[in-house]
Length: 291
Image (tube, rainbow, N blue to C red; front, side, top):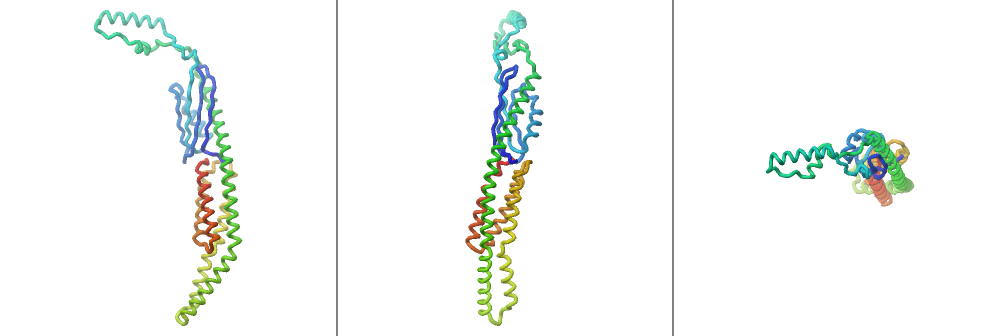
């Protein structure tokens, strides 16, 4: 199945600490490049998150952001009254012994270790919920990538069919083009023999004409184009990531289309080769987003 590298997914879940929200965005990239944005108290989950990404995704620049909205119980400010009293008495003592000392700043006091009390929470439970929510979000992302991949595969299939039709058009036109080309060469040969009677080597001239006729034959190029088109269609049916293989096939198709254009004998073949290159470029643009 073809997977797009461009997708977005969002997942939220409730934990004892509050509501968590995962957002995952992915765009095309040559390799897998995860970027994790986590609150400080979730940093220890990073190795497990990266491992999950590697199992699910093969390529793409993936941005994962976790947000935590604390619940009212967690956001309430609870003060350690006993510690505050000790601090107050200590500050009074200091102020008595050092009258010129600057008064204590209330915000600095609030930052004193242990002064602010937070209700105990089950850290392990929070981590498990967070990881499960990440897995769910990643699954949604994969579904989105698969849906987009189906659309990309359909667009590529349409262009492959159009290319196959162009190959058939050139094949049908080829005998007539070769016959006309052969007649032109025969006429040129006759003209040259007549103009250079006695000074030209007829056998050598005929050999040159045969070589020119062989170079003008594009049967092999058309056969290779059909083979590459069929192989590209086969690649689209594979289950593993196919982006790199498809990109390689576009190079091969483009090479044969260029050769067909350079050996063209008629405007029909030239126009077909140009249309092929346009179709190849359109497919290549879509393939840049395929995993």
